[in-house]
Image (cartoon, rainbow, N blue to C red; front, side, top):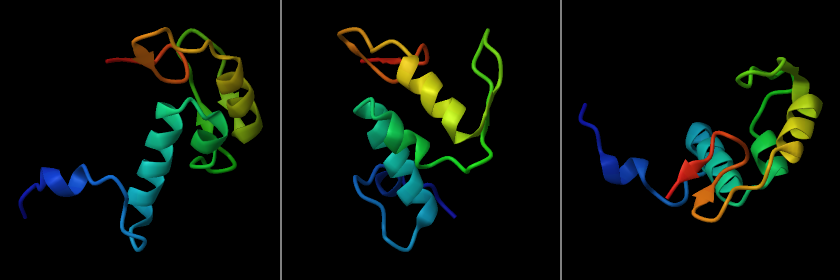
Amino acid sequence: MSYNRATKMKNSPEPSDPIAEGRHTWTEGVKTADAARVISTFCDDIVLMPPNETSLYGKGEAMEWLELSPAPSPGERGLNEWTLKK
């Protein structure tokens, strides 16, 4: 089985591929700093362990943490200190 980079980089997932659909939803949420869209990809009992902070349990705590995270600076995109520089 060969790796097909073009398939991985598709803009929209096939409707029959729930993993690709979830990845697409999460990626678009991060790109637009839409915490609700990112959280929609998490299961209800998610546990997040942000660096140098206490663990977060459940979608409610994760949503609160993402909403309180600083907005990205110009030239960056993301939801928190894990921002991506262009």
